Image (tube, rainbow, N blue to C red; front, side, top):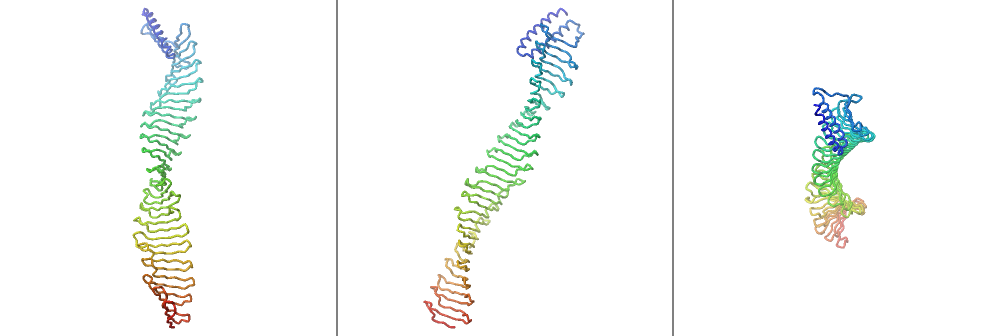
Length: 490
């Protein structure tokens, strides 16, 4: 077998020359390859020179170059760990392949100052880890796999605390984390399993407090959370382009929504715990008009507060989806009015206040036969007026400027047919007239209590009278057309 030794040596030299070419491409890999090849070939050569049943045993193997410089060492450390060390031309450590106390293998690469700069190892549970150190030997980056086997990259600060992590989950979703100095997660970015991007912010207790995301349909959104992990505010754009802000309670249910309606007007809605709408504020019709609606979910029963284009306010009560009452100003703001509607949508009552201080109340609808009006004129004098179906005034009760009450009854043509009044001095009178004011009858009581009856002709001239005098005796008197007495009988 010794005859084959020169051939083996030639083979080793050829492998070494080939290895030199490889070293120029990769220094560290070249050193490891050279040592491995040399050791293997040496073992072959030694084995070739020894009987096959013999084994080569030694505590250390040292590889030296032509100048006698130690370039590699295979042996045991002081604590009994087996390792392979590679040195440069100055016999400084370049790499170390060894096993740790727990039996796991590891590879360490050193810089020119023999500072550990890279370390590849397996942890106790078999997880591979690559660690990169700075010049002080502080680990500033780690690459490995998590418990579920997904890859993860960590960037550390000067205290070897992870501050940035990049990973891919077992579902294939990428994740990016930023951590504080205590290693607590504060920022997270990534993609969901559906491919939708998301961004999450955490507080100092690693509780989620804010999130930004894009749904699979392309709709973006932002969510804010309280300290109990409950979503309290949601901001988003729906798939139809409608913006929407939701305010949520401690129960996580939506209680308020701010959005833009289909008519491009803003809309603010309030909801109860069952998401039934209680109130809404919107701009209706004219861009300068606003409306606040307080009512049920479908607006069947509601209170509407409006601001009209002329900046005049208005209030509307809705029952069964129909306006039943309204308080508003006229278009010129000269009058304020209260309007009442019946179930058929017909106005059945109106209360108006004019700019001059007068006011009026009208009761009745378009289908009713007549209506009632109560008013106060600009002088503060009240009046009660009854109208027929044609809106003609048929009866009125009012206070005159002298402070006397007056009751008037009119026919369909608006002619006075009866009048009952009390004079300022206490006298009372009743006047009845015929058709077209032809003739009439008057019945009165003087302030002293004396009653009287007066008959008038078609010209409204008194022609006959019957009265009681102060002494209690009756008096009958007849008058001519000039009003002179032509007959008088006590």
